[in-house]
Image (cartoon, rainbow, N blue to C red):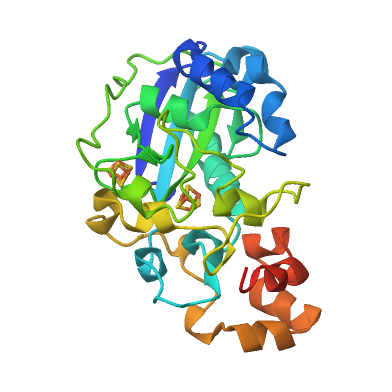
Length: 291
Ligand code: SF4
Ligand code: SF4
C-alpha cells in the first residue's frame, strides 16, 4: 500500500461480543493488575458504534516493525529494549499514516468521515483485526499474521460508510501444537486463555504506570519485552520491516549499563526523545537494570 501499511482488511463496525466475555473473565480474576483503564469503557471497547457516532465500517491496517533486534539479545544482556521501542514512537507515525489514508479516501468518496485510532482509545484492535481477516490471536495474546508474524503495529480508521464487500474473518488459531511463546516467557505470564497476567508480564511492568504490586523479575529487560515473540516461528520466518519510518533510531550496540547510568537527561533526550522510551524516562529505565 502506498501509505506504507503491509496489511489492510475491512470489517463492519458491529459489536464484538465473542471476545468480550473472555476479557471480562480475565478482568474479574485481577489479571489487569494496576492497569485500571482497562476496566473502563468496556461497552465502547467492544462496540465501535458506541465509540464513534455513525460508525459503519472499520479499516484495520497493520505494519511490520521487525528488525534485527527483534530476533533477540545475547544471553546475559542487562539492557534489553523491546524492538518496536527502538524506532520513532509508533503512535505518531501510525496516526500520520492513517490520516494520509483517510484523507485520500475522503477525496475519492463523497461524504466519507473517519476517525483514526492506534492503541490510544478503548477499542478492541486485535479482535477487529481478526474479524478483518488479518490474523488470529496467538497463545501469547498477540495478533499473529501468516506473513508478517506478530511484530506488527495496528491502526484503525472507523468510517461512516458501508463498503461493497467485507473481508472474511480469520477462523480458529493457526498456532497448531506450538507452545514456544508459553515456554519462553521467563515469568510464566501467559495464561491458558490466550491472555496475559499483567502482574507477571515484563512488558506491562516496565512500561505501564508503576503500581503497588511487587515488581516481577525483569531478566535483563529495561523497557518492554520481546521474549514471547522472538521465538514465534511466524516471526522467525517473517521478513524484516520495509517501511523506513520504522527503522531503529537507537543503535542497541551502543547501549550498555555503564552508558545509561552515566547519561544526563539531555543526552537521553537526544538518544531517545522521539521513541516510546520517553514514556518511562531515564530514571525508571536505569532502575530496571539488573532487576
Ligand atoms: S512480554 Fe515477556 S513477560 Fe510478557 S508475556 Fe511475553 S515473554 Fe512473558
Ligand atoms: S510462538 Fe507458537 S503458540 Fe506462540 S503465538 Fe507463535 S505460533 Fe502461536
